[in-house]
Amino acid sequence: MPADDILLDAEERMEKAVGVFRHALTGIRTGRANPGLVDSLRVEVYGSPTPIKALASVGAPEPNQIVVRPFDPGTIKDIEKALHASGLGLNPQSDGRVIRIIIPALSTDVRRTMTSRIKELAEESRVAIRSVRRDGNKAADTEKTDGTITEDDCETTKEEVQELTKKYEAKVGELARTKEAEVMED
Image (cartoon, rainbow, N blue to C red):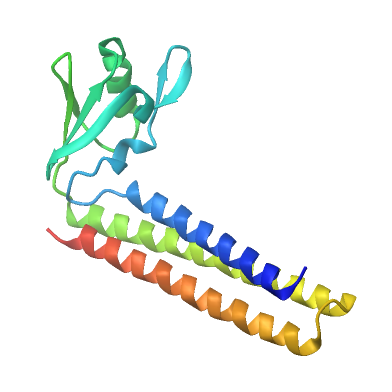
């Protein structure tokens, strides 16, 4: 595998690790309503778990309210049950056509818990990025041993993989700081 392929593979995998982290952050509650809070929710309907996005439109018309509009009014009870069972601490209220979820203000303890969860997720993402770095360096060493690339090319590739690692770890750090600031603001 040429050095360019090693770098391209490493960059793609690091980008995926950041994408997974970004997606995980959407499920963390801030003081504001965010449709991402319930996006990953699965509803037991028609005999199988179905993503809520396939059953309803989810929006946040106000800063402290999420509105779920089922496409089929017959699924409203199932969606309500899934929201109660989600463990998100949400209290859905239904009028038979629409489910409204009022997002309560976060207490200081809950904010601290959310912030520590953000730090855990960020560290998991950094570990994934470092794992990609290790794999890239190993691939470069293998290519050098096989005689496909020179020793200088191997070292250059390793340096470039390290630069990618720094770049993507910085992205994770920035995303984490932004989300922590959102959680801590009133």
